[in-house]
Amino acid sequence: MTEKLILDTIKRQLSYEFNCRPEDFAKEENVITKSVLHEKRRKFSEKEFFLQMATFGNNAVISADERIHPWLKEWVKDRKGFWLFEQHNFFELETKLREYGYKMALTHHMFIPTPELLNHKTDLKIKWLEQNDLSEYYGKEEFSNALCDRFRPDRPDVLAIVALDGDKICGMAGCSADTPEMWQIGIDVLPEYRGKGIAKTLVALLRDEAYRRGAIPYYGTSLSNIASWKTAISSGFVPAWVETESREVEKDEFAK
Image (cartoon, rainbow, N blue to C red):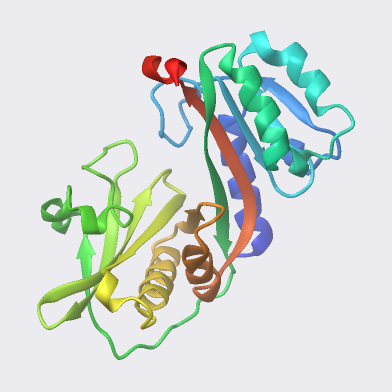
């Protein structure tokens, strides 16, 4: 697998979700499209987003409700797309969204794997868990990043790896099949075991195994989660794109 193939796959997937063409993510000018709910999307929401925005480091592609298109066209004019994700621009966007009962939600910094296998070696005691082995771990707060909150058939957890201290699980990394081609990795390490390289090892091993099973592993984190950034980079991932979306404002938030 090559970096180009990985990026082409990612951009094709995002083109479904942002109602655009894959090549739109490489343009100089910003692109605004109508929100859609594509059947091939990563199923993070059961209804279309009022607004979502992505950049691969050059322009921005924005999918949004058509009511806000006139304002968006003025907002993006003469602005480099990746700067739209800065806080002062987000404030302007947030202020406008509030008029429609929405606000900005999380900003996701997304990583793709380097093309080669790492073949990471470890002395850790590890155990692999297949999809049928995962049900007993759902709902456990200590593994809330490694696994979904429950079995989700539209993006199921398909594989996990744990590090053991005796019989105790001290860390877990898991893959959710967000699409048949793209498996997202999440990681949890118990507080008393952090700083020992467990996260790096589990993510690196899971990354390679996803590759071997024909999937593209990918990894996401937030802007300020430096520990997670370090885990991604040390486990064979590189930054690739940023995406963000809006969510509805709860009724009691209007009073705040």
